[in-house]
Image 1 (cartoon, rainbow, N blue to C red):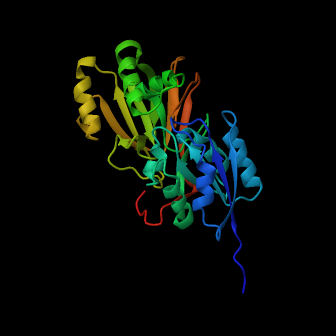
Image 2: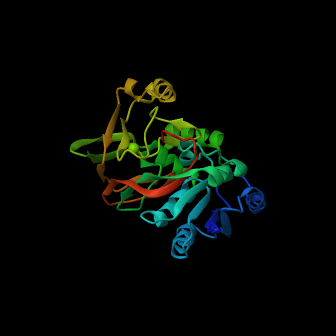
Image 3: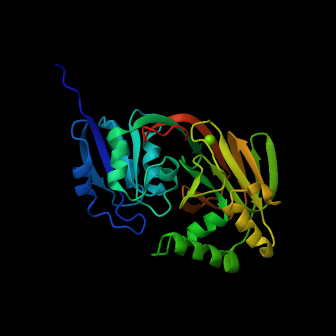
Length: 303
Ligand SMILES: [Mg+2]
């Protein structure tokens, strides 16, 4: 009888994402992984960008699966190296918001549950979004979220409560709208923007989404733009966003697009999968349909 060849899995653990300690993850991996299917290795990241290098080495060494243990930022780093290869991305969501994992119904901060997906799940192809900066997996853009993310970078406190508080402070004391001209396929819009976000996955994280549903494999980006508004309208706008009804907001417009070009001013702060940075030149987004293998739960039918 022919013996089944075991698959090789690389776990890449970011020891500092989110507020949660990850010291006992290797023990949990050892306890729950299916040894009949898998041989595995574990590596810890030591600096920003290290996860991309580890994932690239995993591809070169013929690993079948590379598991991101961390937040959307860690997933982003690893995806950069797996796009277009046979090595599949798997996720143990361990960040603060975990938008990508939640979109794919992989339970956050649950090693046993996430490894169950690895043991019993299926591999599917999903879209990524290529830009002149880097790829993103979940969402990217600029506005109130990127401003908060930039300020948040230097906070020790993470989690939903401190994020909400950071957003209130940002709105009351610091936030300046972003002036930009944006080409969304063949439509051009111009203005002072409160928010511009292009979604591949539909979640910001914390189970929050602007749209009720978006597909991560339909070859199209779902885009929300929101012009700047008087602060007195904020309660109404927050309620509409909570209800996932951006259509009720006069300043908001939704688009579906494959290609976007942002001509911003010199002080643009972008966020890519929650990671904020300043970028001075034009930024392009282009969806690359079904270009990366991802492990998802066996019973996940729409995603
Ligand atoms: Mg889509």
